[in-house]
Each structure stands twice: as structure tokens, then as C-alpha cells.
Length: 110
Length: 112
Image (cartoon, rainbow over all chains, first blue to last red; front, side):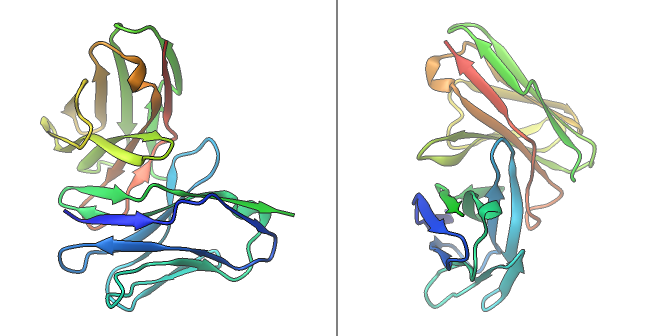
């Protein structure tokens, strides 16, 4: 079935640093790809998505590009803030459910 | 916010006791899911439902059962809780298989 492999971290950055969290996928066809974010004490929430190859999803300054050549969907942000501290999950559909990466914990220090 | 509520939010129980977690939605979404979240494992699917009385197993279904007698409620039951079932449990819903999931805020279960 479809699956994702995600850089696990944890990742610690200073405020305004550049962020990359790597995600690669294995899939039949070209499913939509997702990034979810989980803030402390909460459930996951959708951060961004891309529905086809070369699509760029973006939200709250985060971006990810669906690259079929490298089967990747890396998450990037040019300047992180303390409020971005959270756990980030890459995900894609698999038959009747969603498959998630192991999650990457990001801590941003002032 | 998608209307999805999990109850209870926290529960402590003893090994061998039955436990039922409830997920309630007000969105009339067809698909409902139960995941568990453990350090180093991300989210793993326990069971899911694709309609009333239609359910199927996920990758970690042993020791769990589910029921969905109406669209809005999806119950997860641990028939005889074990310490390995200590985890945070998340319910999620979606109207179809191409839309993103909307998650509840989770239930933290501790089995002593």
C-alpha cells in the first residue's frame, strides 16, 4: 500500500531560521499529499495539501511541492516563529484510510 | 471547526476492565476513524467505518472492537484493557477519500 517516510527529528531552531522537514512517499498513482500539524494537547489539523504533481501547497508561510520525480513532499518555511513549535506529520491516502509519517517535533527558541 | 467531540478526554483504568471511548460528529461525514498515537510510531489506524454498521480493521486492531449504529457516533471498545493499550486515541472524520481528515482533540487513556 501507499506509505510515507518522514524525517523524525526532533528539530530545534532559533527564531527566524529556515525550516525543512523531509518527506518521501511510495504510492500507486498520484494521490493527494498532506501535511498536518499538531499543537500541544490538541488533535492534528490540516496545514496544507497538494493534489497533483508539481502542485505547491501553502499556508501560514509553510510550503510544500509535490515532486513526482523524487517522490517527495518536503515542508519548508523561510522564517520560523516560536508559535510554530509543534509536531508535523506528512500523510497520504491509502485505500480507505490515511497513512501518516512518524511525525517531526519542531521546537523554535526565541 | 469540524464538529467532532471525543469523550472522555482522560481516563485511567485497571488492567482487565472494559473501556469504551466515544466519538461524536455533527458533520454527517461518511467516514470515521480511530487512531492511536504513541511516541516513535506516529498515528496508527485501529479501525474505521465507511457507513452505518460498516466497519473494517486497521493495522493495529487486535484487542479493540468498534460499533457504528448511527452516522454521528463511532464507539471504540477495549474488551479487557492491557497496559500496552495506554495511549492517546484520536477520532477523525472525512466526507470522502480525497478530502483531508478532521480530528478530535483526543482521549488520553492510561491502563494501570
